[in-house]
Length: 359
Image 1 (cartoon, one colour):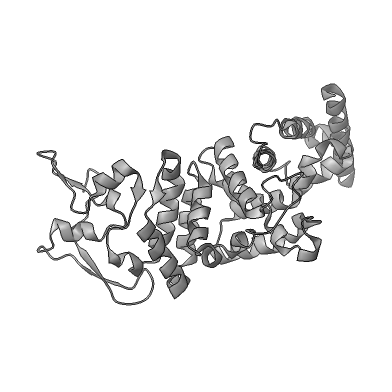
Image 2 (cartoon, helix red, strand yellow):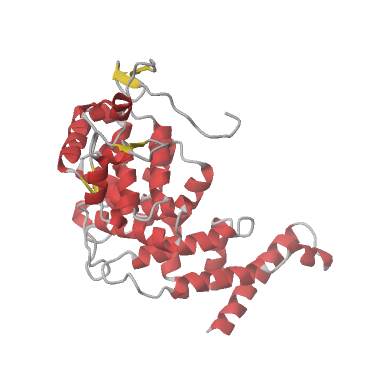
């Protein structure tokens, strides 16, 4: 309508094939409100209200589940649509901070769906859509945990699922399990950058390389930042992840250890890091990278409130280098390759000067 409001006809849906597209929809006028509500995913969404009287129509006890903070499927047809598993996990990313839990019978159905192969029919675009929404929520770890507990994460995000059970050095990671660390990092990213799925995705995928460490090398993960690029690229290709998301994620995967040891990097080495990040053409990336690295450092048991001075230092040194302008060098009469060489030297000198001031 011209008002821009959305209206949906009462309808029923009947399974006719595999996957979330395998349905026959019936919008016959004889469809009752109760039948229409039956097609909802969860009881808390299967409540109608009479606009004239304000009376609630709640045939599936959604108000009761809302009061008890339980996410429960409406009926047995839940198993017919694999997207519902994703939506349940995404709902938990939003509702877990409010104390919601998944009903035991709903969790059992999700496990059955994962075991049946029904999730194999999920299309990449829909997986990415739900993941992106979950990363914008307050507790993305609930998305991961809900899927992992249902044995669905191995189908939907196998690169992330592979992190569970992989040990890390307890002196650096008291939580030990890399999967638990990943949950903590995702939640910390949501805390530091609320609603920012771009930062959230980079935080989620920064440690994928630890799943590829040979077990005989555990709990050390030498070169995991380099190993992680290949599975990250595979994940991005499979889910058709947008370029801005994949570019930041690859940068964070490859560079997070360098940022952690920023004080040890030489001025030239730091400049090279900035160049690899394309930080002189895309300056916003440095603040984003700093957030991901801070989430990594604070997403550890006992370090949730720890200071992370590397983040501010990285932004300050980048700003100093960014202030050097190629046009100013051209005005001095330099030409061609001379400008590039002089620009690099001037930026490295600016980094060195900023370090002395900040020391």
